[in-house]
Image (cartoon, rainbow, N blue to C red; front, side, top):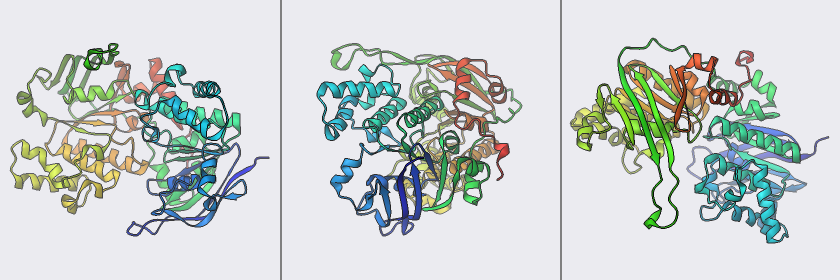
Length: 543
């Protein structure tokens, strides 16, 4: 018989005055047992992450605080224990994996020192024992070369390696409860699959209860025993994974499931004869020179893009897919000349832009524009949306009145209220900011739109809206798109053709439907095998 580890009863979390609603979480209840995985699902703002933080006693009080309710762990109400008791529980009894390890890890401490800190605070061990235990943990989470990792700083590791390091820290003291807050968001599919398997293996070994926060029902299908669906701070549906995934009852749950991209590629459009973009033998390397001030060892050279050849024709969407570090984003930046390639040709129509000076390139800039992964980071927070969108045309010689008129038309096209013209980026949601980024990219009436992971950090429903918007715009304006993504489900929805990249090289390329149905390269096969929820059959859903 499993042990009840956690019991949340009638919990309400109060938001500060001026928030869009009174409560972040209102009157919710859930339980977690040993060896069980409960997935809490919902969009941004649903209250799922604040619920997790309340269990850890990490709410940003006094602005956000528990108003009423109980959180029982081991017979203690966590909402009423002292700060010192909470510190004792964190890490030893209840641990948390955060969504973004780069912000959760201390940037000025090595991974080894951060693990060591956990042991020094909670247990009595010699320095030698602590090092041995830290190395053992890094081995347990399948990190390569743990001796090297233990002395590395967070910025020296990949996203997957940082997340594994976070898991190692969370598991250091064998906690009874592991809270995982979106631990696989923005990770490529193979790393995502490895992280999920790692959590499952850990759970089996330690009989840990896992509270898994996610917006991805594909992940839910792979890992959940029970599911809790949250909307606007309230629980709207609960049940076993099978019940919720196959026979959802609440309209909100049905809408979330309906928005999930299917791993069912669409048929490629008939190819136009005109090539708007071609690359020939494009190469790009980083590093390889002498270190700072000419001291120490030479930096290791990384060949990010190696002899890449692609062809993008009028009106089609070409997907660049692969894991993090495969070179797909570097290729995109070479195409738009945010960075210069080392070798090869990049042609817009018949014009090779690789050798053009800044002044010579200027008239060609408007032909290819980019939509970035993080819209907030790519938008100037100090200027209003209208100016952000109209800047490009004005710099290209369009007068202010015509540029403003065009901006209002673009706001209509991307589905934003015209009053957005006079607002600042911080006043918008993530999905709305991405629409602003798309409008800015379209302001110069480009021939080619380069979209670099444009939906990777968005909720599934917002993701579906942005993908539909991009496809509609491509059709209306006869645009061509180079679409960079690590999510093969997204590629299936929007891409006519796909180029699979590994270690800077294209290992396979062809029509999306044909390539997904019959992948030739082992790497492509492994990517498809790693897609979360791939065995979940949508035909069985009654939505």
